[in-house]
Length: 156
Image 1 (cartoon, rainbow, N blue to C red):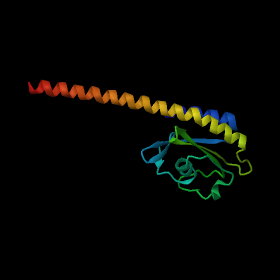
Image 2: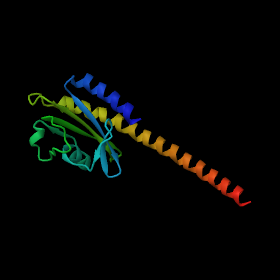
Image 3: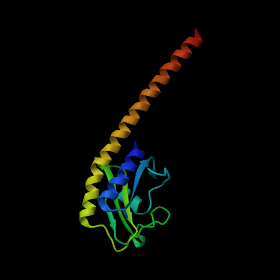
Image 4: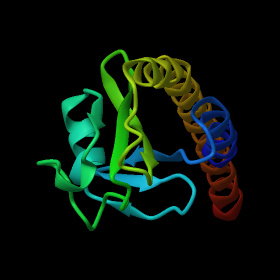
């Protein structure tokens, strides 16, 4: 599930980029992006929203002054790397990583590493959604069948 994936991602990103890295997994739900850890969501805005809407990675060494920065949505980290989670061009979310030290921007190698990590992460999210959707479709069909039987029994 996304919460378990977020916890695993949190540990993995910190192991790869160091303990100061602050990863956040944002997932699409309807017209909102929500934080997988807190469940809080908003319409896409800021660097995270810009990454989601453009489908391109944003590596902001001065995130607080970036043209897309939105104090209500973006973290207060002065350094921010936002990577879109795409499957066949469809955005499923954004992996956002912040750093509190303005003297420690993300290197091209770190950016490439996170973009590489985003590929299987997006596929994993896509598979989870497909399985979750199939489960609910089966449950709805079973409930509809139960109701049909109950109505048929009540009518006789």
